[in-house]
Image (cartoon, rainbow, N blue to C red; front, side, top):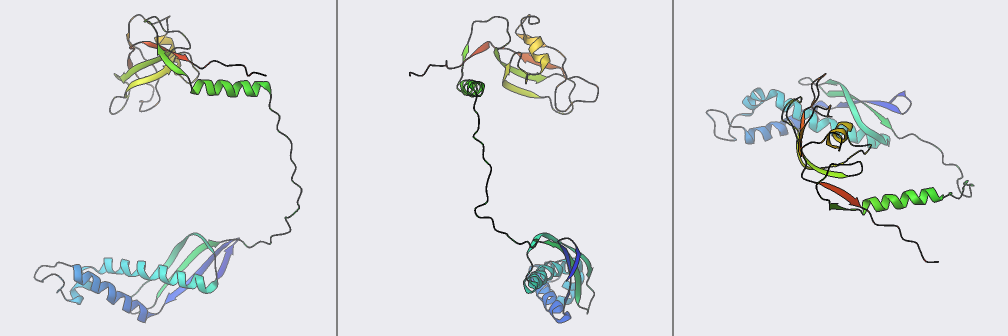
Length: 246
């Protein structure tokens, strides 16, 4: 075994020619039992013809059988703790000669565990402010909110619009289409163009077309042209805070 650097090692492994020939014979027999060649019944083609017809496949199968087997054997003999998948290089596989290859891999590093009992661990009591509590409560209220329909009217910031969206141009491939997409008007995570074009300042009809840069399959320098249908606005009805009795 050779140490390359750090935890990286390499092994040069040789498989005796007798074992290579034995394994090759087993692989040839497997191919022979399954091969269907013109002029021969299944499984009756001569081994010499099988070797010639499937030479590349037989060679690859022998390598796949022998390399992992002998690498694992050598690793156990060396008592190595291999980390990851070894890289197999310098494979030499010639007729009538031993199979030779080099395996490069990393092993688990060796280190000494020193005394760790009774080590002091610094600890500080976490500080929870009223602002932290208020944010947490608001977050829970938002998750528990119920959405209620309101009478038809222009949309306002804070409203939730359930829209059907389909692009009419400006994207590559199939149009982007989504039904019942929930948008919060004026929210930070809502594309500004949606909020502006669906808001009270711009909305004249329930069907609206406008140009806007959309994430996704856009061609360079072009804007998507989404078409929205707005059934009706919704408002989020979050649970109210209650005071705890002292």
